[in-house]
Image (tube, rainbow, N blue to C red; front, side):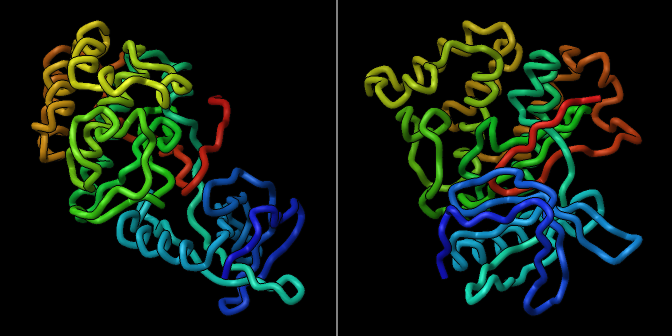
Length: 307
C-alpha cells in the first residue's frame, strides 16, 4: 500500500494499532524523510507513559524493509530494545502502516561541532567510526554517511539515523549523497563495503573540520577532472585539524582501509598519542556515568538546545 506524502497526524490525535491494540498520543511532528513522517508520541500504560518516535511510511513495503534492517542492525539502545512496535491504524476506510522506536534527544553532528568546536571532532569521529564498525560486523554498509544522518549527545556519543540506504556487502549502493560518495570522486565503485563508508566518514570529517571542499551547491557542477584523490589530498594537508589524522584520512581516501575495526583502533591510538581529547571529555573512552542523549530515528534529526 502507498499513501500520500501529504497525510498528516496532528498534535493531540490518538491512534490505536489495529492488531496489537497499543495506543499512541501524538505530541508533534518531528520531521519528514523520503519515505515517511516521524512523530513524537506518548505511549504505554497509565503511570508508565513513555515518549517514543513513531514513523508512518509512504509505502508499506519500504517500511517493512526498514524494519527488517533495524531489527538486524540496531537491536538495542541503552540496554533496551530499540524497536518497540509495528502495526496499522485505521482512519475511515484507509489503513496506514507505522512502527515505533525509542526516542532519545540529541542534535546533528554539524550543529554539535559548531557549538563545541572542532576539537570535539576527534572524539565524535571515534564514536562514529565505532558505530560504523558495529554495522559492518553484521555484513552491511550504511551507505549514506553524512552530517545530517549523525546525531550527537552532549558528551560526544553518536548514533546514525536513516537506515533506508543500508545495503549488504557486495550489493550496489542505493542511497548516497554526492560529496561523500567515492564514486563521485573517482575513488572507487558504488559497491557496499567497509571502505565505502570509511571514505564517506573521511569526507564528513574533512567538511566539518573546514577543509577546502566544494560547497553543496557547487558539487553537482564540479568538473570530472576536479574530482580526484589529488584534490582531496590537498584539502587534508591544507587543514590543521585534518593534518593531525592525515595518515588515517589518506588511507580512507586511497581505500587501503578495508577493515573498519582497524580504523577504529588506529584512530583511538592516534588520539591518545597526540593528546587531542577535549578537556571536558578527559575520561574518554569510558565517559563513565553519562546519560546517552542522541535521537535515534530514521529519517530526521531533532534539534534541541543543550542545557
